Length: 295
Image (cartoon, rainbow, N blue to C red; front, side, top):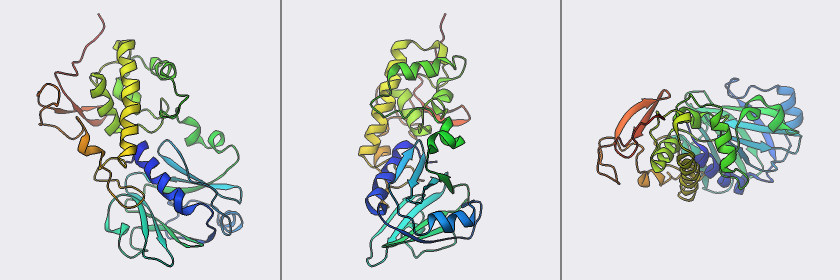
């Protein structure tokens, strides 16, 4: 599943081409991918103009002039692919299958938006993603999914004290499970959890209550730094994600622990291990990230 840097990379790319385009028609062949009232689609979406392309956590929000917004979650295999009408240019983000470059629609296409200057396709092989319509007014308060999300970790007003206070409510939880919890902070997934914990020298299985304030401050800084770096590099090069122009990101080439099991730690040369924490495959250096408890 894409994490905050990947979705932000796609958001920025799509914002350059979708804003101010008008939606001329919408069609779908899979209701679960587009679970919306046809009348609202006809009255409020068709002929509306795209005002912006926004992001909250791992979700994309596209406000329309008709008073509704498209709430999009790509989940594991979703794609957003734009094809210009009068040029060969194409833009795509999501699971890197041939759908990004081949003729569309294809067998994975679930929703088609005909726009002023081209076509936007929502593709999803496994059919877990969705494009939902929500009223734009107070969407971040009225939508149950968005309302539960924690703070955005990269905003200027997201402080260490906010981070620490949220974690302290989960003192008996492992630190990895806590930072993967989207109600604690929005957008952090497996890649950036592992990288942040390694940078902070915290074992992922450590209970939150056993971590010193100094180490929590290290983790706060490390998570923000590693996600900012990933955005600069175009997102991760995870097998499941590419950026808004169909290019794989380059972050994983610089990853220090994620997917480096059986390779030497860059700090101490100890072999990186892959274990399971919070139900997720987890990469750890046993020497640099010793599991400790408070006495």
